[in-house]
Length: 167
Image (cartoon, rainbow, N blue to C red; front, side, top):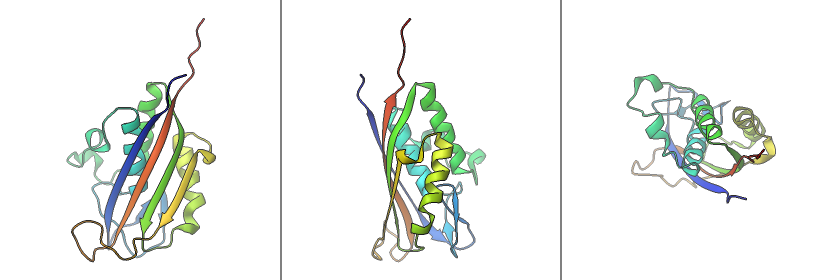
């Protein structure tokens, strides 16, 4: 049996006015959204990075660069799906994922089940393969823009090689 492949992903974006807040493919009620080239879904981005890293396929910026106009306002869940397609092409599947979202506001707990369902559907896995936790930043700045509110995500994944049968 081959060893599991492990990947770690991280992403963060500042909250800004005039954008819709989307996390894990779910619209979150809030007065601000995340600034970014795509829809800036930090959870989908960190998960995509973790999957690509575990498979040895680089990172999200290599496959979906922010310099490419094709990805302007892109649906990050579709980018996630594309990354999963690449893994499946290498006979790899998601064993499990553990994610932590960091945000002082809004409260994300009420959206946990919807985010897990959304991600599980896009990844074609059972929801019990995904774990999602929420932490606050206690008002501490993340990065150099002191006082700028951000949302960040850390994700770790384990990939398994699909069983191959010999005839």
